[in-house]
Length: 252
Image (tube, rainbow, N blue to C red; front, side, top):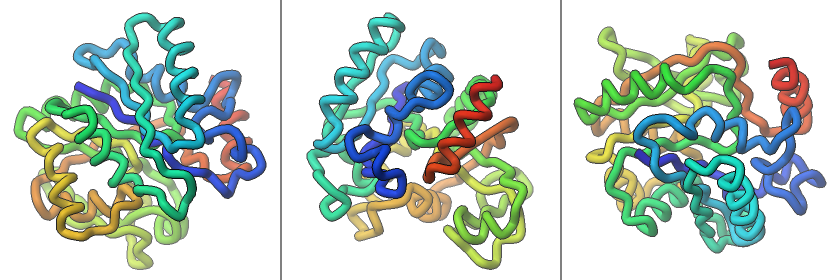
């Protein structure tokens, strides 16, 4: 089982904080944001490699951070992968970056994908347990969260509808017709035999950016199941949410 953290964005909405530091390396409640994520997964049975995909501007920073983290967590193995992009103009997009890591690492294993700016409170055991059960049938698992505000879902997130057995029956990004406050977040588990579908998605000419676009395509190819997390979850996209994360995660 591998873990991939998406960290190749430029986070222009957080300038000047992110002019010279990647967003996942910004401090939240006393440690880099990315460590809040990693601490959920490091040491879990079966996880033997962590990839962080980033851009040319911050590749050296992530490599240095990775060395520091593994010196403090000897069981962790971290590889920083440079996608060699230099700005939003030439970025590969999140799905393009996932495909890059799959190809560069010659990945032939189950893959967890998480956005480097998503923070959640719940331990990863529940998600991993559900994901492993679904993976036994080659079914991917995506994580959902109850945002609690239907207008927020319609403007920022996705319209997610489930069939009676729990698999995704409908998925659409930023849908004004969304009727549920439960939405999918960027935390996915792809069984080994479904990982290759990323290449097929791109070969068909689909948009390489925004991970949710891939889920909107994937559920039509194979049954995709969900796992809903509880507790706090934050998508750090602005100074306001960064400040909120500092307040809320400092109280843990």
